View 1 (cartoon, rainbow, N blue to C red):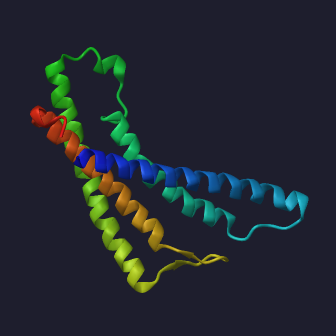
View 2 (cartoon, rainbow, N blue to C red):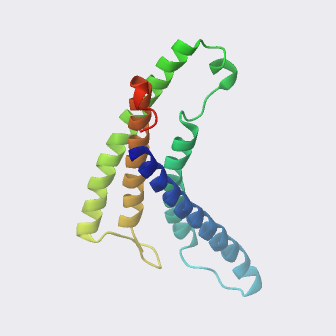
Length: 163
């Protein structure tokens, strides 16, 4: 039940990441064509694209982690390792990824809250609020941590695999 909820959240965030990628592509295309066609430049184009990139990256990572259940693997080596050793490697990977992403979630939420309270904005021509990007980092890192904890739970206690 919890795993389905987390995976569903990952799918929703993945669609938001896809929308951010689409907006990045459209904004980049308009920024490239506008000076040649109309002779005008788009103010803050690089800032907007960088701001959207935070969403594309941090909202896309959780579903990738949920689908792969192990991140990037060198299968040519991994397939030759005995099953008992693979289990321990998967457990260590889940612990290490959680140890990296849980503090990112914690600090990301603190930075988000500070940015929200102080109403922090990027000093660009069209002003961009910083708190949505900081929230995306906190949510993405938190969901990756939860996915790894569920994966760890299933590997250590396999009788709960279908819950």
